[in-house]
Length: 133
Image (tube, rainbow, N blue to C red):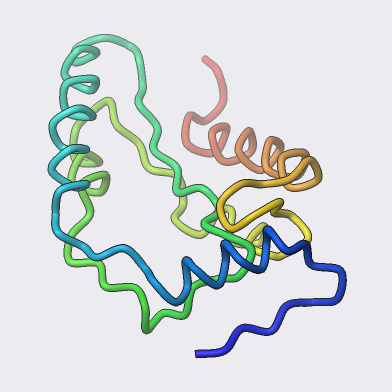
């Protein structure tokens, strides 16, 4: 696999992104089990209240991962969506931010990325919650 970076890419962007793309973490199910345990406890804590729990898939990196590298066997957060106080943001709501100019390394948005993310998140939450009553 080969990744080509745009001119002006920082060394930190290049090295962390190459490392992530070439050595994706293995999927053992431990992270999903962890999420089921702890997110389940948080969701349970607010059961019956007016509180809503909203899950959002954040921008994953400066270069969208090829679909062939995604090996999702299940989704712990999607499983929670069947509960009455749990909502999921549109899965691709922040895909437009998965570009090198919005990241400072392979995982973290830079200032411009954050400035663009915040209004997108607010718009998505407003869509999920609807207008105030």
